[in-house]
Amino acid sequence: MRALSSPGVLESLLDALGAAAYLNLSVSWVYKAAERGELPCLRIGSALRFEPESLRAWVKTKARQPLRRLNPTSSLTKV
Image (cartoon, rainbow, N blue to C red; front, side, top):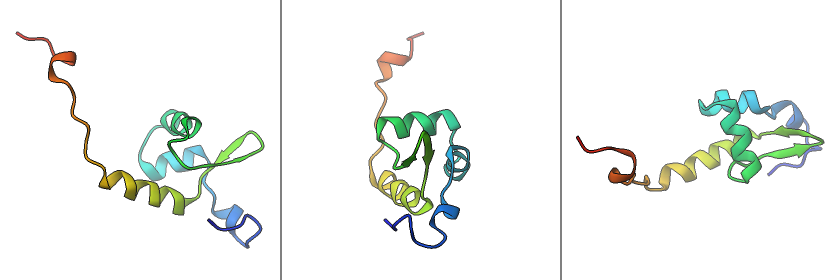
């Protein structure tokens, strides 16, 4: 991670709306995932900010994980 004092770092940080657009997810999901510690973020005062590099790395780790299977009997009713 780059130091916040490096030139251009603060300008390249995304807010929750920008992170949501970048990830193609809802803003509420971004806030919840960040609060759970699932999505990497920086807290600056009360604001959450996201480094594009960290989001790219997070996406790559998610791409390597196998999909969780749903339990077919828990969410579907038999006809």
